[in-house]
Image (tube, rainbow, N blue to C red; front, side, top):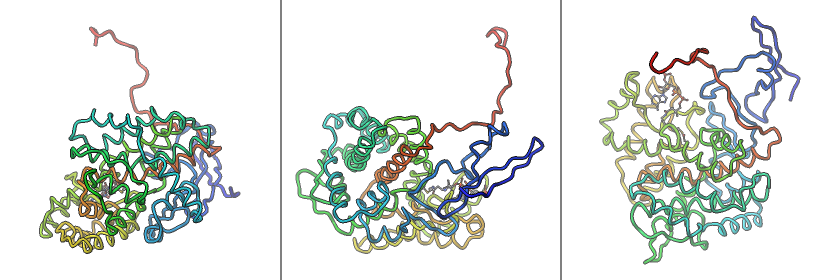
Length: 428
Ligand code: ACO
């Protein structure tokens, strides 16, 4: 807290509100006493000017295109670290020492299996169920199986729930895929990496040995790291809001999965690839650019634009580079990548996109990579959910341990009918 304040003046009076600095980034105006003092609410649909909490996990400078996890730039983490290291960093605040990393990796590997009875849940879904529908259901159902990690007032139980969620998500996502293609579920193999194990559970079959392709493994690892956390985005805020009531962690993460599914959020990777496929050829791009600019057409360029980034999304840069590498190393020539490259170039030179500061976001190239690896589009958002679980649990833990934590309860600007008397049905 500094002694700086912001003065507010209205016809009703004058008030001073303290300014609180962060370690970097904009200061916030502390309006916690605003309603008590003024009798008014602040109005901010979409929370474009509202900091809902304090957090030490992730920092974004949207104007400069900077993303830091616990201070470390995302491109350095994507290039040099493993997903286990990033998970430890997000949850515990520091990069692990070698021994800590070994212990953490070992602990996660001890939790990769699902309660056997959970596999019967899958059979209740139609074969064509969207994997995100299955993920919402199965992750929510974990609360019914792991009673020893749902007392959120106990830090030890919170950490067990954290480990379980990070460890079981690959198993849950891979089983959703296996169910949709009618292949037997694969049990986890703890002798391979977190990412390798996920690839094996997804693409391996019990009848044959599965060898993890290091190119694909590296790409997958980067994708997981790039999606691991993104401060107070819609799904993370959903997890925090759900958790603020004291709900159990598995239910809170299921709420985050539900929010992530939407095409304006995590569902954009699926929508972006579908759009690139629909565009099909570079010569069709101008038509789609025109549609994106037409106010009367709801069409938007999927994978473009971001609430916070008004510059190139730093994750999109790594993603683009990874897409080029994966396709080259796998010897795949995908016209969708040509369309994506061309679309990006045209949009970046177009006045509409320049003026509105619309740049490719993380979802623009991720679909191209996931498609090359062999994932069906419906699985894209499920992979995002898998990776983002680390951020969700880190943020959930931070919230529960915050002494200032309260149940999240926004107010509203009421614009409905004023008080009136009930009218009998025959007299209406
Ligand atoms: N294509 C065309 N125009 C766009 C796009 C786009 N992708 N994105 C924003 N705009 C325009 C809007 O029409 C609006 O124009 P206006 O001021 O003339 O009305 C202006 O840019 C601002 O857009 P908003 O919707 O007000 O911005 P907001 O911050 O609310 O939305 C969002 C951000 C949802 C990401 C938006 O850019 C979008 O819909 N993008 C496409 C979906 C997408 O890629 N989502 C993934 C986000 S990243 C993630 O969740 C991992």
